[in-house]
Structure formats: C-alpha cells, structure tokens
Length: 372
Length: 252
Image (cartoon, rainbow over all chains, first blue to last red; front, side, top):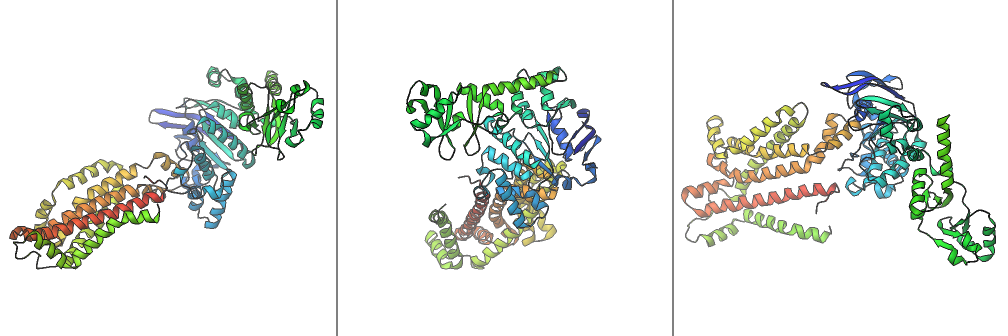
C-alpha cells in the first residue's frame, strides 16, 4: 500500500503540488490524471524520490520512504517512463536485466528471468533477446520498457505516461495487454496519464488533479456518473456513456456463438441451422475453430444455395478480441454497419458473439445503478 | 558485411602500412626516391640517425602527450558535466580553446627557459595543443545522452557513478574517440616542431634540411610524418566505426 500524506512540492515561489493526500491499496491501479502542469508527474516522482517534497511524507506499506537510500528504494519499485528510455547500447536482454544486475543476481538466473518476461509480453525470447532497441517498433520497445520495470518482480509499479509516445492503435493494444497482465500480477500501480479514455480503461481508482491539488478521487464509474464539479464534468466530456463502455470487456458480455463447421456445410445439416428460431446469421469455422465467415439464414430459407448464403471474411476486419472493450465492439459494429460481431481469442478461434442489444442493456443497467 | 567486402575495405590501408614499414626499415628505398627527385644533392638521407630511430622518438612524443591529454581531457570533460562541476563548464571551454590558439612554437619558446631543452617542453606543447578536441568531444558526447535515458537510469536505482559508467560513457564513447583521433593526428604533425628544441623525432631531418638548405632532408621527414599521421588516423577511424556497429545502430 502506498500512502501520501499532506505532500507539498514547491519550486521557489511556485507550488507544483499542494497538500496532496491519497492512498493506493495493494493490487490496485491508481491513475493520476489532469491537464498538463497539474502536478501529476511531480506527484509520481515524489513516490520513488526522484523528487523530494517540500512538506509531507510518503509511506509504502507503513514505512516511510525516507528510511532508505533513494537508489535502494528505486530498485524495489518498477518505473516506466513515457519515452521508454531503453538503453540503445544494450540488447533487449541487457536492458531487462539492468535492475537484476544492480542487485547482483546470478547470470543464469537473470537470463531465465529475461526469457520469462519476454514470454509474459508475448514476445519470442529467441527473436528478441539479442536485438538492440533501434531494431524494435514503438510498441515492442514499450513492452520491453514494462518488462524491464517488472524484472525484479517489484510489488510497486510507477508508470509515467507509459503509452504516451505510441500511436493510437498500438496504444489500445498495449492498454489491453496491460489490463490482462495486471489481472494476473496484481501489482500496486500508480499510473500517470492525460488521456481519460486510458484512465477509464486501466484504473481501479482515478485521482483527478488540477493546479497541484486533487479535485476528485474516485472509482472510474463514480467519476463518470457523478463528476464533483464543473472542471471534472468538462474534463470527462459529454460522451460519458461511451467512455463507460471502456470499463467492460467483450468477454463479460458475449454470448455463446451459433456456429457450424466448414466441413458440415452440406444440405442435410442446413436443416438444423434453419430450425434455430430468430437467428439471422450462423458463423462458419474451419476444423480448428478458426473463424472463416458466416451464413445468412434468411437467404437459405428463401431457397438460395450455400454459395449464395455464405460470406467468407477476413477475420481481422470483422471480429473483436475477447479482451477488447465494449467500446471497441460498438465501434466495430458501427464501422461495419452490423448489429452483431463475432468474438475471437488470441489465436483467432471463435469463442462467442456480441450484439448491439446486449451492449445497450449494459449501458442501461449502469445508468440505473447510479440513479438509485 | 561479407568477408570479401571487409577485406576490400582494409586492403588500401594494409598496403599503405606495408609501404610505410618498408620505407622506414629499408633506407635504400627512400634514398632511391630522393636521389630521383633531387639529383643535384650530394647527400639525400639525413646521416645522423636513421628513420627507425627517429620514428621511435616521434611515436614516443605522440604517445606520451596523447595519453596524458586523453586522461586529463576525458577527466575534465566528465567533471564539468557533473552537477558539482557544471559551474566550470564555460570556463573550461574557454581555457581549452585559448590553449589551442597559442602556437606550439611559442609554448616551446616560453617553456624552455623553465624546464630546459628536449623532450619535456615538447610534450607540454603537444599536450596543451591537443587537449581541446578531447575535452570538447567528451563534453558534447556526454551532453548528447538524452535526458530520458538519464531519468530511466536514475529511476531504476543506478547511482550517479553507475549511470556514468554503464550509460553515459558507453554512449559518448564514439564521440570521445573521434576527439582522441583528431588530437593524435594533430600531434603527429605538430611533434615535428619538437626538433627545434632538440626533442628528436621526424622533425629532426626537416629542421636540419631547412638549416642546411637541403630539400631532400625536409622531404624525408615530411613523407614519414605524413604517412604516420594518415595511418594512425585510419586505424583509429576504424576503431570508432566498429564501436558504432556493435550497438546495432549501424549508420551506412
């Protein structure tokens, strides 16, 4: 648990952070957010003593951070910065191994840990271990940055706009991966961003700052439903309902798919398909459950042949990943002009389907919850 | 780079090195060349010392002054880029620039009354003259390390000296090497001036030739000094390049 008590940071006459107190529970992701210059990064840097406060104290699990030498403290806290900061003269493996080497780990143990972390980031150790940062894409470099911060398995992670320098598409992927990894690692995370969508996506708790002070400290749902004042209201924006959809993953709402194997696409099995009442589309998979296309049941009923009723697709266009948010699913539906989209897992295997009505139901439920 | 291409790029340098070795070791080659150029001269080779001896003296002058300039130059460059020494950054820049504006001959003239003739004043002159590129390159190499990397290093718990040794120096090494190369090449040329105060080296036949009005002597020393400067420059340049390629940031 991290606790900040009455922290103030002044630079001469200028007060960057004024009397800030909040705590982050163990295993929780706390997002510090606000317009630039609101003191969010400064607050973050006060936790691992990159900066020292003018007043106030920081406690980690009840112990003051000033009891330890700053270098020793920082080795126990994972740190990810906006521009990644990978060392260009070190390989990926050496970059990840920086903190373990500072802690004098055994060489073979470091090598094992590096491979383990690359696996966690879903990057093949054989391919990436010996590459130099200049040979990585922005998204890959960012993953290595996170892996490096996790090297010593620190219980605490500080992330300063970790995905800020990545393009929007990759940022979404990284956010999704982060949420997924965090679900298993359960680190205590303080995460700085100026992107509210990102905050809503990753946070258990959002601390909104303005001019060095905390304006609101709440769960993402509460921030969206009950903004404390006009500033938060404006900061959240008018598309609150849409933003709320980022809180739900597709996997939570999807239904079991109605599907048929490619090999079963012969006349006699189609009877069973036709009999399923109220179903317009049936997904078609190959023998490995990989999504290949869909059948339009209405066309079959009208007496068309299989060739006419079957549409083969590129999965990447149509399907959403089970770890995606409802917001992405909705956007996919609007983009493709459909009311239902298939859901796939990481290996493009069909695992479900999600439709517009179910998404609407979620919004209504949340709305009702907050009206009570 | 394939082995064949590698060999091809090394070939000219190897040939020049062999030619240089041949000229220095076998004085007859040089004699033939100079007799051809200056048929009127009775004597074309400086008689008091052969090139091998002069070359050894010359290399020693360059080696001592360059090593000293490297150690002091890199050291000063590091000091003035640390938080504690940053106040002196401008002062050091100015003083080292000033040192290079003083002609080595003037340094010799001023130094001889205090430390005598020979090796010592020459080393001092060379040292003062060649320290500027090293200090300047060390400073700019260290200053070029991006603030993000320094923040990352600090945030991961590196101490200041660990950051210097593991991050800053490796990244600045190539620029520092370039400074050392410049200073070595300058020194090989400037060291010929040492002959004026009796420091020996490849300047000896040059000075003697000027005094006796014998252009063959001048050329003997000049050819050897020029070849030496060229060869050292090329080898150091290659060392510099290989540093860049090992970091995967090959700049073709």
